[in-house]
Structures are given as C-alpha cells and as structure tokens.
Image 1 (spheres, rainbow over the protein chains, first blue to last red):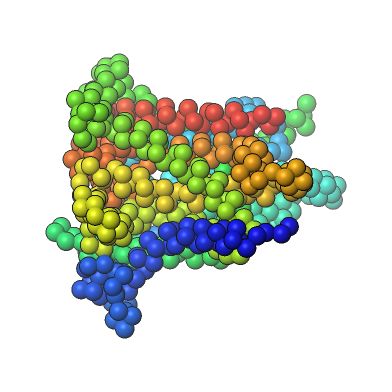
Image 2: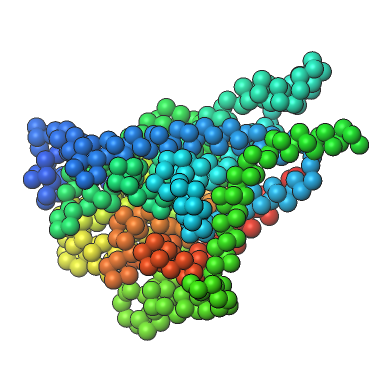
Length: 277
Length: 298
C-alpha cells in the first residue's frame, strides 16, 4: 500500500506529540528526583545537567521518619508470599472448576466472578475486627492472608481460562499411564502452564506491591509500614520537598517497572486475558 | 454412582482451600458489612436511617451549592463528574491512539510509555498529579501562565475550583494505557481483508474507522467501559495522596468518605452504609459483565 508523504509526516508527528505529552510527567519526576532542591524550586526544566546527583535518592532511602528502604523491604516480605500462595491455590481451584463436577459448582463459580466487582471497602470494617481478634493487625501474616484471598478470584478465572486452552489429549494420556488426578495436575498441567503462571505472577506481584488501601487499614506500626504507605508521610507540614518525594516515588516505582520490563509480554497478555475473559 | 462421588470428592479437594479463604476473608465480612449498615452503634435495628443520614450529608450531596455555587458539591456529584469526563475521554483516546500507533515505527515504545500509568502504584500517580499541577514545579500552571490565564497558573490541588479537575485530568493520563492496550489487542484480531475490500471500494480513513474499526472493536470497548466504571467508582489512592478529598471536601469521593467514617470517625455503621452504596454501584457493573461473559460458558 502506497502512502503519501505529507500523510505519513502528519501521522508520525501526531504519534510523537502524544508520546511527549505522556513522557513529560515521568521525565519531570525523574529529573526532580536527581536534582538539588534549590534548582528545581522554580521548575525542573531549568536544571543544569552538571548539578545532577543521587542525594535525594539516598535521602528518601533512609529518610528519618519514613525510610523508603525499610518500606521496600517490608513490601517484598509481603508481596512475594502474597503472589506465590494465591497462585498455587487458585491454580488448583481453577482446574477443579474446569475439569470436575461437584454439587453447587456453578453457583460457587458465579459468586467467585462477582467477587471481582466487590470493592475492598466492603470488607474493611469486619475484616479489621476479625484480624484484630486473631492478633493479626500490624502483622505481615495478616496482610499476606488478605492479599491472598483477594488475589484468588481473578487468578481462578484467569487460570481456568488458561487450562481450557491446553490440549485434553495430554491429560488423557497421563490417565492411561496410570497417573492420578493430583499427579496429572502437578506433573503435567502446571508445568505446561508456565506462560499463564508468568502472567499471573507479574500482575499479582505488581498489584500487591502497589496496594495502598489494605496496608493503610491493617498496618500501623511505623517500622512495618509498606513502601506505598510512606509516600503520604513524606509530605512536609509547611513546604513540599519535591526532591525527596519524587525520589521516593522513583524508588517505589522501580520494582513494578522492572517486573514490567522483564515480563512485558506476559504482563500485557495477563492484563488482556484477565479483563476480557 | 461410586465413581461420581469420587469425582465430586476430587473436584472439591481442588477448589476447597481457595473457596474457604474467600469465604472467610471476602464473603463473610462483606455480608457482615451489609448487616452493620442497618444497625446503629448500640446494635439496634435502624432500617435505612444510616443511608438517609449519609445521603443527606453535605459531604455526599450538597444541593444548597450544586449547581448554582462553586464546589464543594459532595462525593456523589464528584464521582459522577469523574465518570462523565473520564469515561468517554479514556475510551475515545484509547481507540484513537490504538489506530494512530498501529503499524508505525516506535508505536510499541509509545504504547509502553502510555501503559506506564497502569504499572506504577496509584499512590505515585497521586504524587505525579500534585507535581504536574503544582504552582512552582508543575508544567500545567506554567503553560497556563504563559497563555495568560492567572487563575489556572497556581497549584490546582490547593483550590476548591480546580482540585477535582486536576485529579480527573491526571487519572486520564494514568488510565488511558488500559483502554489503549485493550483496543490495540482488539485491533490485531480484525481481519485485514475487510480493510483491503474497503480500499478497493475507495473508502477513506474516516470511513474505514467508523464502518470497520469501531464496530469490530465494540466487544472490547464494552469491557473497557465496564472496567473503567469500576475504576472510577472505587477511585481512592490518587485522591488520598493528592488532595485527601480537599480542600474543604471539594474533591471528596465515596471511597474516601467511607475510609473517614470507618478509620477516622470510627463509625462502623455509617462506614458500612457508604460501603454498601459503593458496592451496589460496582455490583451493577459486575453483574452486567458476568452476564455478558457467561453466554455459552459453563
């Protein structure tokens, strides 16, 4: 197909204008994070390249009242198990819902789907009381449990969809060879599903890492706050230290950004699959 | 018969751990919240009183100010304005950008940049909004002053007239990546022959857009609309970090109001009423989405 030159130029110009609009805020955060505050007080666009430094990054990492480094450590302690456990339990359940018949299967599955639309606010107050009675407020275990439960519905839905695309012959062959249902699942089905599991892992990890609301209502101990909870604490009473805040934002964002960069294909596939399934 | 029971047992053993966790940590507390919303703090049944108190509070709906006076107008109005502006904008931008960035050099890179809004924590999204609309370090007030508009040349998040608008515009920046990615994926499933046939018929770019692309994307668009509505109704993190619902409640939203009732005023019953209202809205969208997806399934 032949395209006229002016048309192509307009097309590319428009595309890159869009790119610039979306890039500018991120560049602003990045530049401010690595500039001395005196220079960005009247706009980050005027900063001199020679004065760039990592002072703000270091300052945010070991901030006196809300150290981001400690927050990121806590976020890892929570996000890693809160990714692996629901992945495991929801894969089992997704397979069960797909392959086996049992009483109430359909209504239970419909409820699981509807849970996707329930806001976390709907459980906040009673869940606080439940966790409190179990001494799980301020506890990583408590938050991991809650994140696990909230990850289950979408991962069940996603993995059930993924399993349904696998060829059934492989399973039948396994049964013929005398493998039981559990052996078939763990030895055949799960290993075959690694691309789906990679999608789930990248999304669930990012969502737990990025979570703010659940951490906000269940973690109060200053030493145990997760990374996202510390951002609002960096806001000064009388003036805003943009250098420290943007540096903290950059540090916290670097982890999901890295996950996205490394697993981009699976990440986007998971997103599309989860939303349109 | 025996083998059927065995099948049941195996099936249940697969789903039971997950179902039990969801029952304890989602279903039970959600039902409990629903019940709490009909009682007062002393445990007396009060019917719809909490809901009426909530709906007639000026933080929810301030009809003495809306629409004749300036904000604050209340969370219901704010969430509605959010939907009215944010929903069509992100859906349309997603379609237009998907078409614009399809098959051009650097398109994948630009799509990734726009998708960043979906990758970063929403708390950071709130920081970006404050930063973008800040009088000193923000690029938007700078441009506004350059254009001679002094009223918009100051920190948007610090004034009742502009706080909500800053949040809505910022959330468009953050959410367009979702609509774009979904529509871009949908675009790749449209058969090329349709466009070739249209070329033979001499159809122009706009004609192809409205007669082929948009109708073929309709199933994707409907999912995007549903997910976007859920996002708008539940919006919390960016409001918490950027404005805390202020100044003077001018950017208050339902979910933040619920948080204040539950964890600042410690009024579990009022908080439950707000949460129930919130859930009624999201469940309406959810039921529609489930019905749509269940056609021909299980």
